[in-house]
Image (cartoon, rainbow, N blue to C red; front, side, top):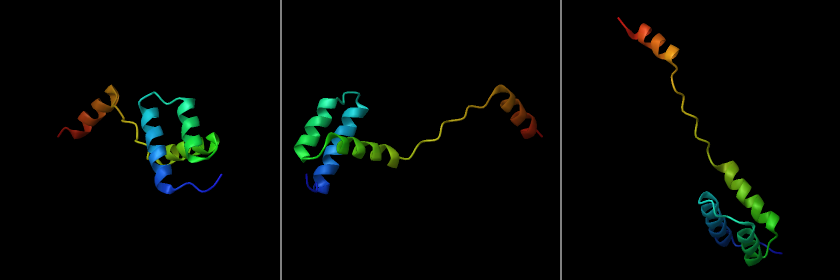
Length: 78
């Protein structure tokens, strides 16, 4: 097993991520990608895990409770 061309790796990972986001990624996809690049399946799975780690997480939206709304209205009123 040798070094994988960065462009081929990026294209493969992008396609696998797309399949995963669509809910259709299977072990067979990972197996075929690994075989096509001449690497182990675990290597491909590590690449996918790194994509997850590098993505920024979006903060959860905070919904004001009724008490928050009332406190804001009280403080904002003249």
